[in-house]
Image 1 (cartoon, rainbow over the protein chains, first blue to last red):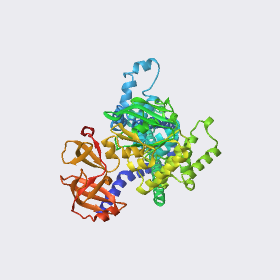
Image 2: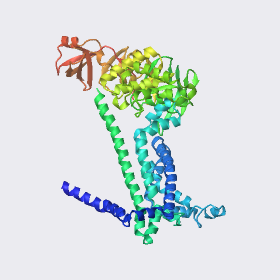
Image 3: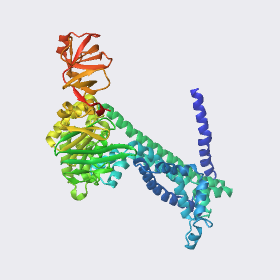
Length: 275
Length: 344
């Protein structure tokens, strides 16, 4: 029975996870390394990479700040509407990314709520970089907050209150007491948030307008290449995202391993010294 | 520094945690807030610390109203029940924290901080554990670190929330003697919360007994134990037998009736005799005799079926040759009577 289960799990993983990964890299290098590098360094691809880095570079720090603030507020304080806020944080998870994108189109688009005003003031959000950044922020909002919240709630208020009675101000308490206690969860949340920010397709696709070299992110660029029957080039660029996924997994494992090691060290040490 | 608490009220939703509490704590005293869980003692302590704010009333330090001041400004040392040590800092860093977070102008030099922390570590006898992390210490050691950390900032008052609550019995005993000694040396006004009557009576100069958001009685350990002001205090401080009785010409008669007054008698103030003795006595049957420990404990059942606990010296028990299931006379030596409506 045990072997059966293991075999089923391994076969499933191989077919659905490892095989596609192998195919991605296999297809990417089908026409040799030179073609692979050319696919990555042509102007449109470079522009897509740049835009993806920019969107993630803005979305991740923003969500780091929002996530910490939200987790802190929910975990440490009682206020009216707290459960509503908790539910709202999960909204981007439960809503289809396409809908997330449409929200921005309806808000800032030509026929949208704020559309006429934006046009009058010559501000472009939809089919431009700001829209892509906004959509990315929206879909990646939950990651940091979700990772932090259980940690913050489990740790309670004691250490912060202790810091307060010892004369520490809010910032000192935050940076010297709170952050060190949640740093692994924080790092993990940032890693996941970054992976999603770079890989997001649906929401960004709706607001982007697919203007080559201007509003294409890596996933959108891959789609265009694929639709143009440039399969090898599409896979070459796709291999970047696959690589990002692998790096994310690796960093995540290291972070988890580090956190566990620290816990185990402290646990065994306390076993030894306890009378 | 003296603390005075004036008519403090505090609600959590529909729950009344404190219902008009008044308390005066003279400078340099060690005062225990004693009460069952939910009596409001921890809330009162947290309000004194500035970690919680009252809905009404005032807190004064040395006559100054500090009700609106934050915990940061009050310069109180607070020791938490579960230590609340900074888990990612060593013992040394924990104790030094309060000095390191001071604005640069008021911050001692690194040498001064090191000297001060080392002094405190010597005081709590942990100078060899300075580089350890809290998780590597025993419960008693952690609590001592928490105390040293609170003392490092030279607080004007020391507040301790169930300081020995999560320690095992032996360490508790050691640590509370140590706290008493420490207080005799440092003489800082201290308030500690406990639900353990022995702890309160042994350690403190004065005890404030709390129940349902009110202070029932404040007094020296001797006063509250020997002259309890209410049935609650009597019941809460030490074991007690509760009877009903009537009072005639200053003489109390314990009897079965559920009417009349409430009569409290401590187990060690009940005597056992073979013959009726004095005007007030009643018959009971011994059910269990426990001769282990410094005093012998006897459980009996009265003629009307109520349980009675009696304590006597081992010598007295030997002289009596008491056996199980024997019918004896029980003679109260000292009783305390409260009118019936005073009890809940």
